[in-house]
Structure formats: C-alpha cells, structure tokens
Image (cartoon, rainbow over all chains, first blue to last red; front, side, top):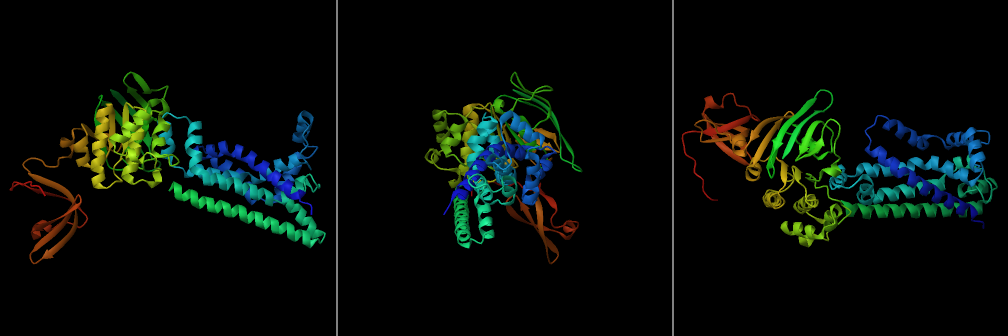
Length: 222
Length: 284
C-alpha cells in the first residue's frame, strides 16, 4: 500500500498551517482592535472561501497562476518559481482556501479578551508587542489551538481546489483526498476503504483532542 | 498638582453630550467622583489615563500629558488604575501579576503584606474571591509607584463588610505612597469616610465641588432629620394611611393622614423629614 498521498497531505497541511498562523496573528489583531470603516469589507473578503464553491476559487487561482499571467511570469522570471501543478502552487492555493479557518478563531480569541486586561498592561508601561505575547495570547490558548487544528484538518480535507491547481501528479501533488477519488473511479474499493477509514480516524482524533483541551482550558481561565 | 481642562463629545445620535471638565487637583489629595451613570465619570478617568482621546490640556506637575499637539501614551503616564472588574492577567499567578508590571520583589511583598494576601502569591486569579481579586488589582496598580491612582468603582461589586476592609487598605496605600487618588463611587458613606473632596458630575459637567458633608447632607434649614427614599407601598387602614418607604437598604413605616397621602404615588422618590423631635443615636 502506497501512503505517499497521506504524507503529501500532511506536509501540505503543516506548511499551510504554519504560514497562515504567522500571517493571521497580526491581521487578526488589527481586525480586533480597529474601529475603521473598512473592517466589514476586509472581513467579508477574507471570509469568501467559506462560501465560495472550491471550483470557483480553484479557477481564479489557476487563472492567476497560469503560465501566461503577469504574476506567474514575474515569479518565474525573477525567482524561478512555478506555481501551477507544483507543490508550491498547492501551498499558495491552500493558504488562500484555508485563510478564514485560521483567521476567524484567532480574531474571536482577541475580541473575547477583556479590554480592561489589555489596558492594564498598557497602563503598566508595556507596549503592544509585549502585551500581545505575554497577556493576550496566553489567555486565548484554546482559540489558537482551535484555529491551528481546524486549519490543518480543513487543508487535509480539501479536494476541489487541490485538484484544479495541483492536478494529480503522483508523489508531487496527489494528496489523500484526490487519491481516494481516483481509487473509487478505478473501482479499487479496498484501497478506498482503507484510505477513507484512516481519514475518519485521524479527523476524529484531532477534533476530540481539541474539544477535550478546550474544556480544560476554559475551566482554568474562568 | 494636576491641572485639567478637557473637552470631549460623547454618545451618538440623540444622546450627545459634551464632557467639559476644568479642575485643579492638589498633591496628595483624595478626590471622589460621584454622579449618575452616564454622567461621564468613567470617560473622565479614561481620558486622564490616556486610554481615550480628548481635546484640551492636562498638566501634571511640570509635565504636559495632553495639549493641542501631543498626547502622552498611557504607557508613559505612570498611572495606577483599578478597574471595577479587576482586569487581572488570568494566565499569571498573583505574584506574577505584580511582577509583570515591575520586577521589584521587595515592593510586591510589601504591598501583598499591607493587603494581608501574602499567602495567595502562588494562586491563580480564577481561584480567588472578588474581594481577594480586587486586593491583587490594587497591589498591581501600585507596582509602578504611580503618582496618580485612578479607581473606577473598585468596590461596587463587593459585599459590604469586604468593602469596609478594602476602604481601609486603599486609604493606607494613599497615605503610604502619597498618591493623588481619584475614586469613582456612588456611596456617600464611602466617600465621606475616604475623600478629602468630592466632585459631582452631571451631564458631563462638574455640578458641585466641595467636601462630602456639604454635598451629601440632605437636611436644610430647621430640619433635624431628612432622608430620601422610594415609596414602595401605601396601605389604607381605617382613616389613615401607612407608607412603606425604602431608604438605603432599610424599610421604614410612616403613618400619614388622608390629606398627606393624597397625591403620593407608589414608586415616587420621597423625602422623610422631621423638625419637632431630637433624634437619639445609640449603639446596636
């Protein structure tokens, strides 16, 4: 049995989660603190991947990254990066697709913090950065865990965008969900069963760990 | 010495209000701020702390905190601030809550000792009672040795006997660290006990400024006793009426003639006063 698609899925999910975490922290902080009128606009824009069919997103990404597009040509000529039907392209597509799943729990976490608690830190002479890392983030561990786990799980589970942007190149861009689709098409039900069962098991374990941790974290902070 | 002359427009459509405050506060003064909710007390404290913007001028000794060009950020004002909801850092134990502000273990121990909570140093806020949390918050506010201590209704969420104890501790801190203390409160007895001076805010302006006795004492002229309360019930008994009035936390029964009862409605604010008798005070 060949488990390479699983390895690719998890590698993709891990890299996507890491990148989105780094991007989402400052962005979520900005959204949670701003009183700007463009906030609803930014929120709607970043929430789009939740409601759009993956094929729509996949189509636009494919279009933007195709060899003839200015962006693609710029990246290829200056950095030698090709983004269509490559693993790097999958990472870019996954980041766009999973962005709201990382952003929203973290933003909710920031917004759920006591405003007075953050102000107490400012009044104690501490700057924003120190307040974020020493006061804000430690008080929203369950939001951060939820954000990372859901992003990871969601990336592992994605199908449409990955298929459109990555194709299904064995060992490169063929992830587990696409592999299952192909197994079913080839009527290899045994392999599809094994793959699907593994997916169910991993997803359940991940969600179970999150809920168990959140229950524990809440009882300590309340 | 603090000189304040600020202006800020509050509220949205319909209930706009201008907060206009001109005030001098002397060194080592304990100033109570009273007034109805929505009169601008909290906003005034937050402007002083630099947590909200305002137009005008704030000068503390010879340092300018706010003028046309500059507004000193809250980090640089060196203020101690106590919130009504404690606002403790929930991820840190009591000792770390204090040391996060200023890593001065000697001062932290001294403060915890004054409040008699040294044995709670390793406990987390979620395991403390309201009174204990507010003591920690008070200690934390003193960690940067503030010149100005601001307290926004710090005791209003606490039980009466714990309030009395915390009043003593707040006064101890005020004397020990020679702060200028601004204290928002609704409770005249608390203000009478603690404050050198009271300002009464109404609709964003200072309506009264003086000592507690002059501002809160309700008797006037030849009246010996006078209380304000709410008329809870009016019961007709034969030819007379019995009025039940709630004054503070107590209920009082007053007998009224038909003529006196006429025109009174349940729920009204009423004043009970007497001239003819000398009241006696005895220990209970």
